[in-house]
Amino acid sequence: MIRVLVADDEPLITAGIRTVLESAPDIEVVAEAANGRAAVEAALGHRVDVALVDVNMPVLDGLSAIEELRGLVPALRTLVLTSFGTEPNVVRALRGGAAGFVLKSCAPDELIRAVRAAYGGDAYLSPPVTRLVLGMVTPAEVDRRREAAELLGALTPREDEVLRLLAEGMSNAEIGRGLAMSEASVKTYVSRILTKLNCSNRVQAALLVRDAGHR
Image (tube, rainbow, N blue to C red; front, side, top):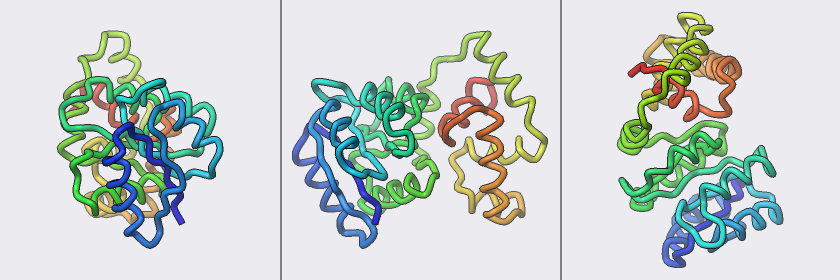
């Protein structure tokens, strides 16, 4: 079972998410929290695999909670809950180690896919939200752009090909089909790329591509 924490200060949203997730046979909501501090405490008090965390919450905001959780529970996979076009700071959460983000208005099956992807060690990048987030990134400063370009320059041509497709939000299976590789080989390449780039997940790697000025 995938054990999930839902953190949102709106009870109806929390109840709706619980109903959707628990309709899946492999997902169980084991904890709920109405603010960021309670979310951190719940994650420490329960064995949680994936946390769905709203950005705007009282006591401790979701962004700070995500950053704190990364230090306290490194194995926990965090997904940001967001309303389309309203979270200019969501990039901070992604740079802080979040495994992706989902719209509160997304379809039930998409929410389930996102949780399963995060649990499996992947990132969930909904194409329209990915475009929004990457577009919200302020053009990188010269030093950041240079550092990002240097990191990407250390990749082999094949690793660079995989990274470009990854940055477009493609799954391992989609990358494999595009490059005529097995999904297992793609997974190996992605792991190697993340290590070389010092990124904890695919979203950070995608943002690094953006920082380097590549599209």
